[in-house]
Structures are given as structure tokens and as C-alpha cells.
Length: 179
Image (tube, rainbow, N blue to C red; front, side):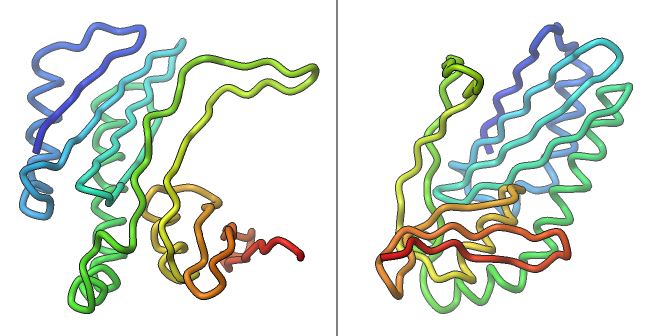
């Protein structure tokens, strides 16, 4: 696995980088050699946020945690990633046996950092995604893997763009465009 460790508003010490290699190293057997882990540490006032995004082909795992100490935040992120992997292990293994994973996950392009202003609304991040046909269940799985509350996808049964979203009572909804 390749590592990219970035510090925003902070200079990262070598012992923290070694800790990242050690903590994320236990996931290396799960991912291919081409997998890339991006660790971003941001310091704002008394908060230190650690965000980890692991990309392996078209599969994306993402976790973020904020704590007073960056080591504590890193530990929390590793726990979250481990939970995501355990939670989706059986679903992923079933999909892998049926067909290759490449069909079920989409690749993300890096978001732009430019902020765009529009009267009262400010767009601070724009993401571009390539839509691959997915079933609703596969879209929910991908949404959970990246830790978002909603996910846009091309519905494989209707060939129409849909959005799945997580509801407050831990159920899911699907938005479909009216004709």
C-alpha cells in the first residue's frame, strides 16, 4: 500500500508518520499493492482531525475523527475503518464470488479546493463522479463504505440516475426522477 500523509496547519513528526504506517499496516493484507492511503491531519484551535481515505482500484474506504490529540484521533479512525471492513466483509465476499468488484464501485476524482460563491449559498467542494450501473443494494453498500449520508448512482434496472440516502431511523430511501 502506498501512503500519502498530509498535514494542514501542522508539521507532522516522524513518530506520528511511523504510527500511521504501523496502524494502517494491519490492513495491507486486505488491499492490493496498488492501494493508496491518504492521511490528512488538520489542526484548528484545540481540535485535531485525522481523515483517512483508502482507495484500492475503484473501492473507497473513508473515515474521519476529531480529538484533542492527533494520536487519539488516528486510533479512532483505525477503529472506524476496521468496523467498516468487518461490517461489509460478507457482502463484499459474496459480490467478489459472483463477479469482479470493478463492476460495483465507482471511481472518484479528487474534489477541487476552489470555493464558488452564489448569492446566499457558498459551494465549498465539488466532486465529479463517473456513474457505473449499480443496483440499489450495491449503491447503499458503496455509500456506507465511504461514510456519506447519500449517494448518486446509475440504476442498473432502470438506466436512470437515482440517489440513495440514509434516513434518521437507520433505514434507506431512494430518490427517482419523475418522468
